[in-house]
Image (cartoon, rainbow, N blue to C red; front, side, top):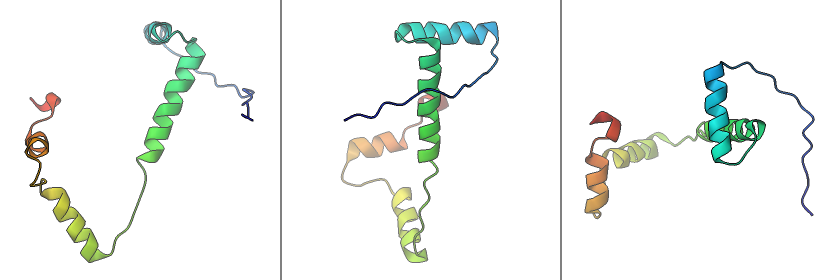
Length: 92
């Protein structure tokens, strides 16, 4: 049986008219209320930030091999090698 979440916490914030209009337009495109949109976006960003903070450790020798593997493009996949060597769109 699915457990329902109660929404009993209040989050207040102030925004400029321009920010509010932008948020409302985006929410409308997704057929969501402003609150639903803001909570969904904030939750996704919070999850992404927390997931990016994953930390792992390796013994020194394995860490050196790991760094070497990152510095060397794969040899067997020409398309992947080309992609990794190309500039990002914002660098062009």
